[in-house]
Image (cartoon, rainbow, N blue to C red; front, side, top):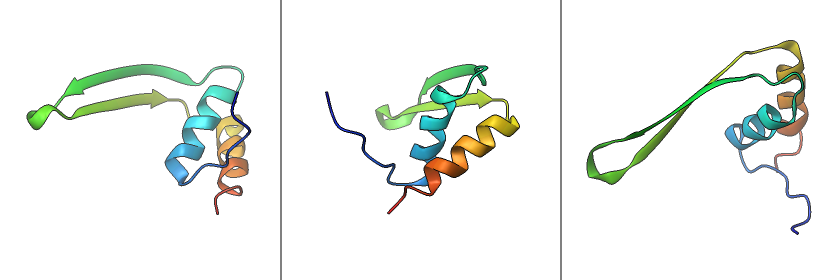
Amino acid sequence: MKAHQPPYNPMQALIKAIFEVRPPVLRGIKIDTEPHGHEVVRLEVSLTPELIQAWGEHCKEIK
């Protein structure tokens, strides 16, 4: 098991916050295959006060 690693950017901080916040804020996910074989992941979340607070806390860890 890996030790806690801080996020490297705000998007990683948001992902950590999405899966940490209760009640859950993830509303949907869609994966599309773009030209040249790239996969694009689209997440739909509710920007609740709890999510915004958790995101801010994780952003503070960015070095």
